[in-house]
Length: 240
Figure 1 (cartoon, rainbow, N blue to C red):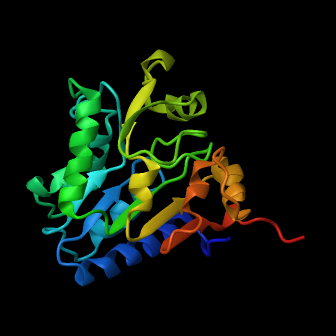
Figure 2 (cartoon, helix red, strand yellow):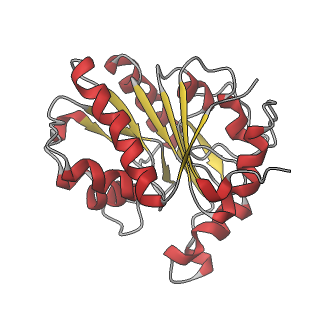
């Protein structure tokens, strides 16, 4: 069981190839529903989309995850990230944007409300995913159950360490988050996985083995009917 991979010669080429996929979706679906990732890798995609003459006025957006306890206006929130890098640069309609509230007074109720909003939208036409160095997709960490919808998660120390540069102090890095579950992601009609950076090499190798392994959550994508993987060429295994 393997997934075909488009090997991009550069980060810019990766962004443009991913933007082509999003652009192709827009005219084919009346009101597309898209799940958005955060992190360094998708920034180029967001910039490429904003440069193109596209309309997102009828597109409904959700985000994959959010730090628990963090308000939308916090400079390190994923809410702020998505507005700064993408949503404020396109013609997105405010009422079509539903992002997780990390500061919701009841995290479990927020998760349930989020699942209801996704269901009401008709599920995802496209879920765009990044890849964590430990193989996580969204905030689904190694050995987390794969049968969950949106839920609260304790972040792995490797994940917290990867996020450390974004915070003034190590103790400021959140220890938990809210995330779409793997069950939610696999229900998407199409999945686009973006992989870039040398720290993703081990996780990418696990995916390329073609065997599901709950130590590497990204391998949950194996067997999905419509997955596109775009990865930097530097992550391609050497031919021996």
